[in-house]
Length: 353
Image (cartoon, rainbow, N blue to C red; front, side, top):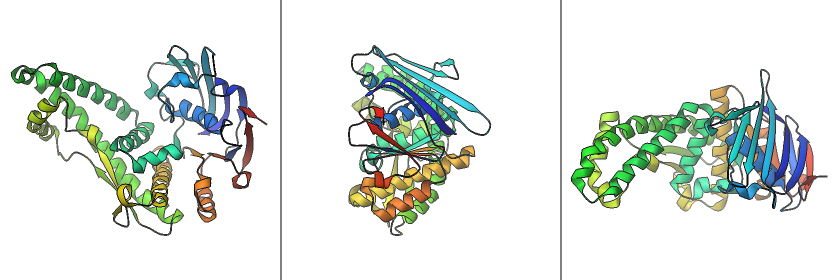
């Protein structure tokens, strides 16, 4: 899919915008705090269903207005897609796809596949396992909607099991019903773990290749660090074994909600021992590997967003990155016009000039 046009109404610092895009590279250029990232956020919001910057969606409404609206149009060789998102001041979000109301945001995921790399994405390497689970979840969900709904089911079952663990200090009462939740959790959890393991095994060689291309030849290794069970019965036994610990803590300690990804450069753990440059390159390599996974699974490259990336890269890496990304429609933001390629879109105070 290629994004052809976006319309904004009262979104962030854009009171009104109607903008066409190039199917290749689109360079958003301007000083800081003028609206470049806001425009990229609008694109991401339509494609993924949420912001990459905030969970407080009403923050995206232009000061004092009742709502913000985004309309995005995309197409490929066989179909067109229009996604419309309206965020209302009271917190309600209305999503339409091709004019029809969408009740579940999972129905939008994957319609216009997208990969983003921004300063926020450094969390993928540097911060908690939750960030790496988010990375797996968004990527897998864009190519497998069943996985997205499986995650939702797992989270509800997990929440119910945790509520049961916290409901009483009477262990016998909990043991009377916890087997129901154990079996339901095992049925969903083992499928999530299988999908994540398969995803990491697929993405690892692409990430290694990307890292070698944009770095000095260092070897990047990516390994799934998740639950080790062969079937649902073994999963249930693990839950039963951890019951005493779970009962004391009041929450479930075993399952894919605690998964992680190990990332190494030349056998050194990047999170703890990598330099900032190595961490940035590793994170970028994983993002570039996402392009190849989505291409492999869907037959076409996703949209790529590069938000304020070039200022952190030396000229050689910038050149390599642009060469690597030439295969897909790319949106990049920068304060330096000398970094720009393709269609140049100058932005100042929420306006294209």
